[in-house]
Each structure stands twice: as C-alpha cells, then as structure tokens.
Length: 140
Image 1 (cartoon, rainbow, N blue to C red):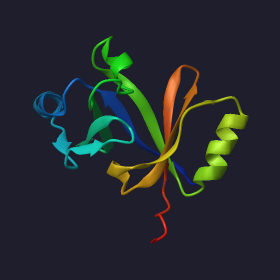
Image 2: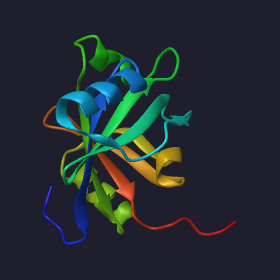
Image 3: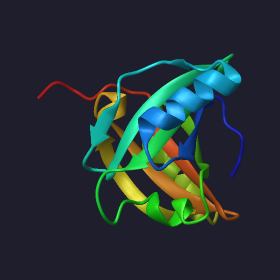
Image 4: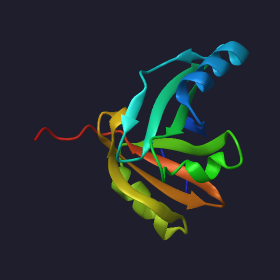
C-alpha cells in the first residue's frame, strides 16, 4: 500500500469481552477518558466505545450476540483487533489496497459510531485494517 496525503491514522481497535469493565480498567490503569457513548452497531455485530489516551484514540469492541467478528480474537483474550485510517477518498483507497494485495474481509457498510459513514475492513500481512470514509453521506 502506498502512502497518500489525506490518509490519516484514526484509532486502534481493541477486542474486549465487555465494554464497561474494560473502559473502567483503561481509566484506572492508564488514565484513559471516555470519548463517546456506548454504541450498538448491528451492521458490525459489536458494541463500541471510544476512549482518549493522551493524543491516541482507542475503540473498544465487544460482541453483540453470537457470531460477532471479535469472537475469534477474544479466544486469545483481550487483544488489538485492528488499526483504522480515515480518508476523504474512500473508494479509491479501498480499491488501491485490494489491487495491491490486501484481502477485503468486510465490504463497505454504514457504521453507527461514525454517523453512518462507510467503513470497510481488509487483511494485510495478518493485520486487520479498517478504512473509514471522512466524507459525510448525502442527505436522502
């Protein structure tokens, strides 16, 4: 994947069994502060909450029922699930990543935690990478 202006690091996603105990632990140990409400995203099959830790943003992801995409990660315990980049050139970046060898694991879908902006996930070098659209959707 080539480096592009307009592609910015957004957050790191951490798979946790439950949001509230994990958020409390991050606050107690690291001084992280809550940066969003807890969202339920039925399109992604997860509960989500963002935390701020210094200049970094952490997305906690917990399963929202059976067959959640974070289930496999949680078999190994709490772990980094993905890294996320934001771009205003969503379709071109995603297309370029796939043409460069990344494997599309979740096609573009609206994401509740991002005001229904599109997100997609690819696998590259064993790492899940999320791409979030910086552009706001057009009014219906």
